[in-house]
Length: 416
Ligand code: UD1
Image (cartoon, rainbow, N blue to C red):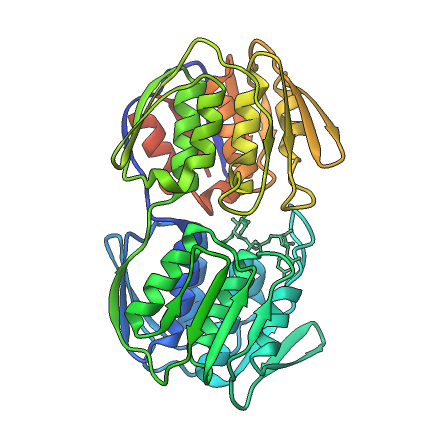
């Protein structure tokens, strides 16, 4: 298992460019299944999850080529609607293929996804939406098989604005007969990116970014070029990295509107942050104040930035309360931060963070992707050496992290 070795206390300085968004590129790559031809996707980050999605597409019969940061997917000769259990287990996001596969083949077969370290993660909303479009599901021997003679547009009310369910339904509905309306849809920027991609393919999708999305089914989707949006979570992680190391960092290629809730919290804590077009400069202060955070669906505070902010708040002045409302079990990093000297008490789905003067390096374990990022941030700020274990989680979502951080002056290396 790989690990990072970090010698803390170095200020991060200079400029860094944000990569393409993991959570946008995964559904978009799944969406290439809808095209009967070639899609050239730009700004594709080299991440473990993207590699798995490529393997899945190839297993379905797609021809996938990588050219620098572009991925060219030719789905003309897809010949399978079944995702192998071994691939499903590698990445939950393979679930995004349900919608595109039923749209393409009228059939899909996957193994029933299980829970993961941050919660049980059911897919009932995905299934509810697809059933409304006419897909019938049978579950047996751990497999989930869906069949639809004809997909038909429907009005779907989501009980919760699930990102994945919204995306799956949008993609299936592009080929359904008639009109589909998704109420209480997720509003994340990645949903807007998926809409833009689908419309370039020739779909008729409107309303992404609001809680009502309307899709008019079409008969055929074509080949296109498309560029993925920048990763707002990677961007937010670098902003915190600058603040927490009292550095002076310019983060380039950002869409600031996508991380307004993070910017607002950093400013509230007293961080010196300037937005200039698609750049944000963070000049770290000597100290900062505690703030309260509650994760919510977009445009609320992103659950994917919660762990990183907890690290930041663990050395803030005063007390902060961090409340996680999206996932049931996403406060595990608190245990690891405590091992580094943080004073954090868990009460239900909240963490009461009493700021301490400093963290001290030790060996900690990444329990999931963003928890891992939070520990890297802790290591950058801590006194002495921090070893972060199980970094395969971090590889799922941060492209060339050691290289990017080293270029900014961090002392970080990896052993695999
Ligand atoms: C996506 C993101 C993930 C982010 C999350 C919330 C990708 C690849 N991943 O995950 O990084 O943390 O959005 O912003 O885009 N739920 C149900 N039933 C369902 C679906 C979801 O109960 O059918 C629950 C989940 O268990 C969870 C909550 O809804 O508690 C949010 O999940 P959802 O918005 O679906 O997240 P994902 O799409 O899995």
